[in-house]
Image (cartoon, rainbow, N blue to C red):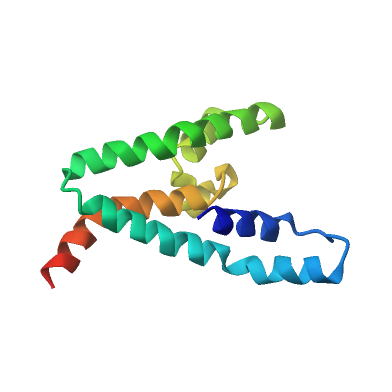
Length: 131
């Protein structure tokens, strides 16, 4: 998973790395997001096998996602001097990604997608196990 994260970072640098070989390596790393989602799926599967309640699943994921996200979000608003209550609500809840009229308040699409996938996982997991 660490290699997938590093490949995502390398791809997002989007700059000339000084050599043809390194630039080609950065292009090859675009599959890092796919690898990260794939490995996260395995982690979710093994987490579901522990038999915790759905509420416990949601609590654990919320504690893993939102504290670091909100710290980064607040820091970026302070650095960029762009705090508004609308930005704090729509960006901090990650809802801005899903409503086009509020996209100017969006702060990263990734957390929005992760929240949606985690929200759907318990129902999907039960459905898949029943098949």
